[in-house]
Image 1 (cartoon, one colour):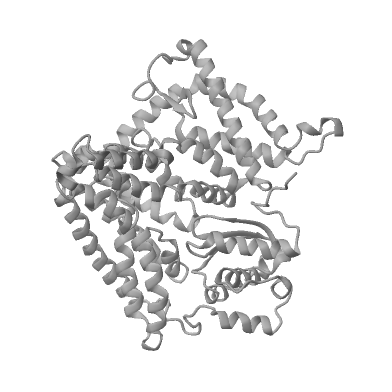
Image 2 (cartoon, rainbow, N blue to C red):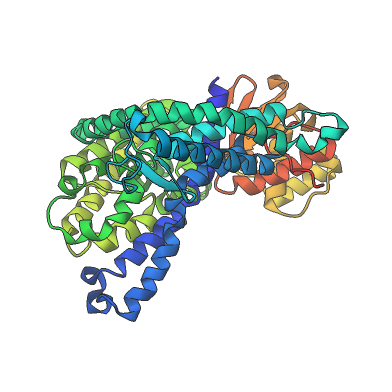
Length: 545
């Protein structure tokens, strides 16, 4: 069950990766239309403002179609075969469901307690999804229908029919079954979802008023669950779902950015629900303190190597907000330090909220500048200074706590190992391994002279070779693999020398912490495996007919 949840959480991150760029574009475009930020050039009706409004309209594409993004994105990560076709099937079935709901509400809306004549948005509980006026089931509905379609697809896509019925097999069969299943699903949704919306509205009020304690617990849980991969289930309902505000914190923040930027007062008072976006702040400031502690406690002879290992991963976390590679650098050697990190992150979020800071500050310095610093500079300079002042203070706390713990208990963090070298495989190392005759696919596969293939080959060898691979998947930073025989998988040191940041082990399920280039490494990994084995992969290329 845990493995399935982890796969599901990783699949949910596939569409989320597309939000970062559009978030930056939107926040920049909105700021450029604010006279408080750029002055009189942003006057209404000017060419400057009109030009930026065009850019803004394109930036809203992702956020205005989040449901469709998840409906299409989830099957890509979850379907066991022909995932591209599964994505198409998911879209068709999802829109069929929404059309059923729309007609039922048009005919029987009053019986369900829904006034279908109202405009979408607000208290109506209605939304336009793909051009259909339907119930606003937000990401919950999208994820549920996508999961149902993936189950149908995995079970029936390869079902063989008699030759004369061949036109109805494959994707046609999946859509037909989905069509029939969506009729009762639409009726059930029309009847039950208005009550769910009422509960969500009450939950929004409760969480939004939970204060610093609620924010601290939320941030702690989001960080603490990273090793399991289940942290996606914590933050996504808040940032992209209806947990505390309709539509999610990030779209709501961007939609009202000019209002927040131009209205005096504490941001916490203007947008109390925005406290649940403060989990991102630790991504900028924790790596500074932790990285400094890892370098300061490394042995003299290994310090340069430790710097080469720590600084690139720390900069990735600070600039882009992708912290998993950095956190996994010390997680498996010192899990107690990771627990300390989660606690400190919770205190950091709670402290900022107590001091009046709230809002979608951003994930990493690049988005923080565009989504928070630039638009808030004119009217909320105090909030900007508080974020960086408190953040750097916590960087110092991180450094002191980590340095003390590492030295006090002689924790073998990178640079303090007794036996292992702090190094990565280099191209020369890999070529030498090939020259010495690596067995199986590693010797016979057509291997390009590129770092992705080198690392993929090393990871494949570490996982027991192509014959040992059952399932292949990935999330933002991890290569997720299920194997036949876990005893054939090598120790963590082997993977780290191949460039990994660590390995998560759960029975026959393994997660190799690769980094932001995991999609490229995964592609090379699959190429080598598929040259020698007919394995079941989560993303087998669809056959062409």
